[in-house]
Image 1 (cartoon, rainbow, N blue to C red):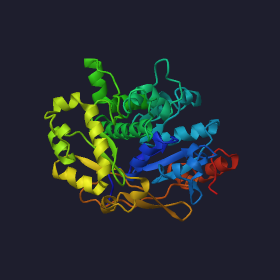
Image 2: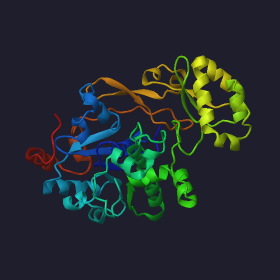
Image 3: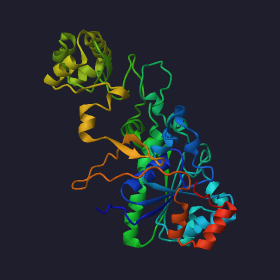
Image 4: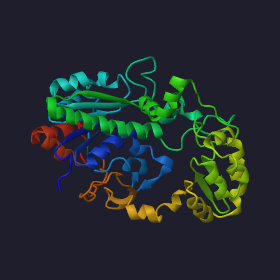
Length: 397
């Protein structure tokens, strides 16, 4: 069955997380994503997290590069840049996440590339945006979380700023980048023209704080962490995480009467209204904290469910592979490696009615598909040999 993006040709110059995650989604939906790497390979190949490898590949590389082909081109050489510009004439999408100024120095900026192909969608993801005093600062996830104000959203009064446990700036920006590329491709069907688009990690994190920032910008209510640990400053207890007899539970916002009855706490039940509960967050927190160690996680979930209080278990990674819900939905998929093995990874979260999940292709080895890619992009056999012989293009090992 033909997938939605089959026939769309993508030149992917991205590295690390935000860019590769975005282009991987394009590949999931059928786009021909050509990963353009330096001769030594994309950065993630040689910078593994915790020295973790599967079948010889870094886990932080393979997790964002399924359904792609690879060609290694030396863009520091004029012949390499000319080759890339020629390929861009035949492509639909050109994506990078270099810092501002790099593509201009290389001569592959949006203006230069799109002169060769006005139908091209030229997309980039950056740290802070392309203008302003901090545009050229390094855009790493932790630095953007710090810059965006998000670190004061959780914890208790007096705690140090809290970094998020996942790479939120990268992940959120990657989704915006995928969305922007798809919107530009749809727009092209009406106008016949591509466009240059930009997504910043800072902009993505500010957007992710929509309700908090609208509250601050228009009412002046800034993050003020309470005296007890809070899952989020904008929502009052019981919203948070608590320890039961044999594990941990997460509680969402709750009507105090229902919560008090589920807990068996007259002090909480007597608050009566949401308004009174909001004034007595510390009392609620202390009551929940005091009572939950009396029962197991399962017992509390049953009790809270009976009273309509939203609750969930706190899982560790080791709980997930055999979790009944995770297995029922098929959230983890086995994907082949370039070396002939396989690895498990979270699958694309989108389900389309009547379309079975596509069979994923393995993340490529360095320049694995160079010969075929050059041929498909109109580079003749003699010129291909010259490019390989001179080292402008790396021959697949």
